Length: 276
Ligand code: DGL
Image 1: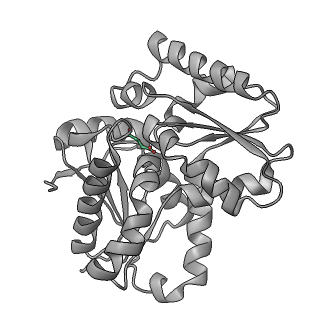
Image 2: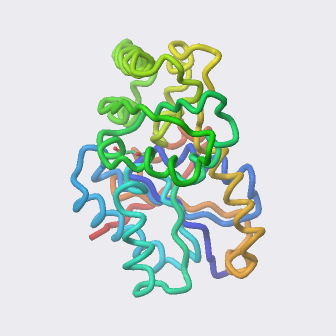
Image 3: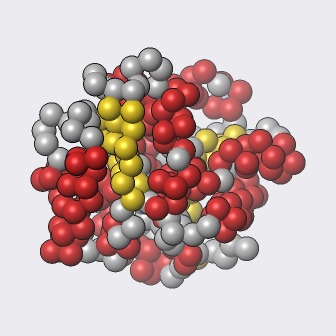
């Protein structure tokens, strides 16, 4: 049976927080998850490197018959998505689609913020790219007033190394959250602008006051994708729907299976592939 799955790509495990929600919303769809665990993290790498790694992943997922790819990584969405959509896609897969995680999050902010003061927690790469402030200005409408950002360079390595309940994780989560809260006292919405961060949600909630909305991307991306597929039946009909999920990683499949099971909440069996 031929599969034409939705491709879900991340630098490592973070995209699993998005995949989990996609599967909940679109249970009959097929998915192919690709984690570039061998080269994670992307957050501290240059534009050129993140673009080239992301393009390799996108080409690979198209070669695996994905009609639609979700870049479930903010760093790659910030640094590579636009160029891939505008320059590469017409050449490599003119009928394919590649979507990211920033625009759906920004649209959600427009729905929930009251003060228009928004905070973004992200990797150094996402923060330096200024993608969130730019996209908020474009898509969050009149309600949006101002954005402050905080780079959290240690959060991804803490998650990748399964240190989410450690004293080290608590130290850095507390520090970065206190920093961003001090940057703007009127914040009412805080975007977790990295798909790894929901895995630290227990600690995050401990330090973010209850009156501030925390935007977690998984459910939002799932909601917006469901809507997108309704509006684009020509793409929807190309995707196979046998409830099959396949996992691939550029690192050892054994260690991926072990950690991914923890992140996604069930046993999985990944395959190792090579990119580049
Ligand atoms: N999950 C990626 C993101 O959303 C992780 C980044 C990394 O590899 O540093 O930005």
